[in-house]
Image (cartoon, rainbow, N blue to C red; front, side):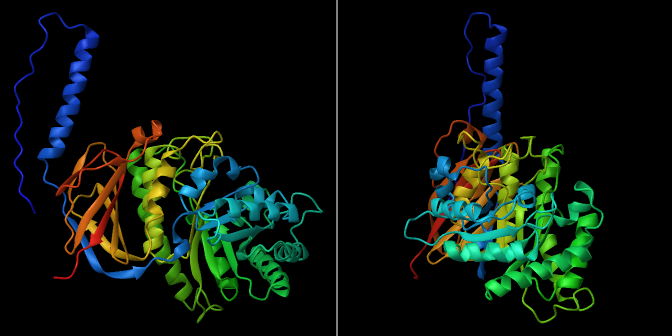
Length: 454
């Protein structure tokens, strides 16, 4: 580590000899506050970065998956969508899945969206997740087993390879939001079995996800656990949604909720392994996945969805899912659905777009990573000779971080803040020094290259 000595002149600057106006005084004070903030960051002891050496595989679809619906025009934001290299797309999400039949024209449009979203014309398409229709709004709604089978036949005819058929969407809310108390976990489990059997008759290799509950606290968690008890023998990917707030919490409380996704992964892994709570599914490998997530579930409120707090929470949640061994994570949503989305309907970028552009490089093996500063959240991934370190500074002030990692040389570092997004500017390149200054409320990607063995 290189020792550095900082010298600052603390005498007051010479002011003009004329009387300051109120506006002029305000500008001087504002400049002084900014200078003091920078000095404070420089004087504070830099955070120490610690990276482990034992890696765990990062599953390909555990980062940068998204939801896409009928009304999201990917073609109008193709450059932005391709820039995040989607690993999976889920169609259709939210209530739309239970308000429209799964018809061939819709599946054809979804296939086109997959093709438009692929980063390379010659590369593989994102994994496809299709939700079946479960709730009926009309007597002739296409929510019956034979309708699910027809969707599978249409997918085969189109050449649409479905990685998972997710049976319905948020069935725990049918009783409350749809005013149909007959939708118990037991009824949903029976529907899951019937639709699964119908699709398997068409495609014996098909895999199935569910129950895609709206959250995992209270009655939603009970719904999921009851489903596992009755259907643990037939679900391939246990799925749920993460929406911890309504956008009205403080920034600090909202950000702190990111830790819960790690707790949920541990909780459901234990649930699946428990012979009393999962009597039918013992000995089966069941994957885990979050098929919708966002900091707030209130779609028409931009706070904590379209701002920097929402982006930092999203990054932390995504990276925790990947490190926890989730097979699938799918953010809501890829294109503006009210305040949700990486860009709005006019294609104007939001902070989450910049975050996912950086997280696309989180691949290979996850390494244990930490700092001694609780306001710097850090994650690391090793991919061959490259080491990627992602750091969120959740504080409203800048923080410094020692950049040295034994056995590696730092070859690049880029940050973005809300100001970067507002200006639609490229990420800020940081000077490659022993100590990096991370801007307030920023997300930074640091890239290291392994040094030759001595």
